[in-house]
Length: 305
Image (cartoon, rainbow, N blue to C red; front, side, top):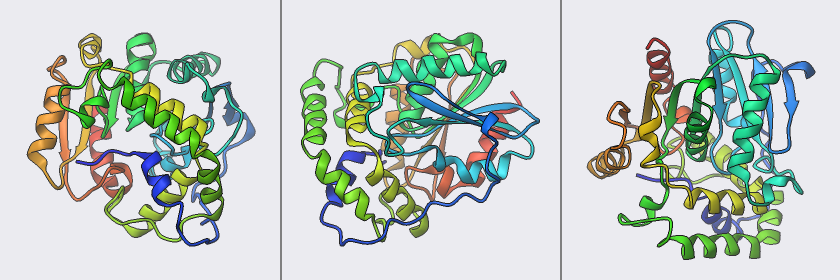
């Protein structure tokens, strides 16, 4: 069971040999200007004209481009609203460098749905984006009709220690935040050099995806990553998910130690026994990239509920 720790990944790559940053390309048609909107904390892009509305929220240190493959597959029959967390794409000087990042993302997304006159949506969130999706469902139940959470827990702290609480991991959260800030310039320089090859198995089981993910993580603005990491580690939704009454499916990677993964997810989601937990094999953390078949199948299943 692995979880995306972008700060550690970035720091581990600081001594990588300089290489051109690999270009990130998308195979789907570029959206029109009208489909793109910007808010203080996020940008959103709407793809597709027909079918059920699905919101796609990326994880820590990953841009909206992480959903490009999904958009290519699904946009002919779905409307897909892709969220870009400002700063995860490398943008500097945004409000996401200060406190209130998660609340700001949730508020901006709600505003965007109203501005576009879009009704309740199925919300898909990967990793940190899964936590954001749960926050959204709790504060904007009228705009949420389903949740598909991809390899995310309602409290990241239990990854660090089984008896974690917001209070007892606060010192570690502070140290991680300060460590990222202290190394920000070196991380930006490493991001500019780029990563020639990502580590297979670290975040993806495939070389191409591993390299894409590594470059995304290296390019993310460290000040935003630091703030997001701090808020992630200080957000415990374990008791609150009992108040989520829409269909909710959680995909989690079951490689390496499947019993440990099953126990952790079962315990952390115990407050809501209606949550459907789905183990996925032959994948690392980025399930939608490693196992698009499993991701699409569970998306179709929850849309049918």
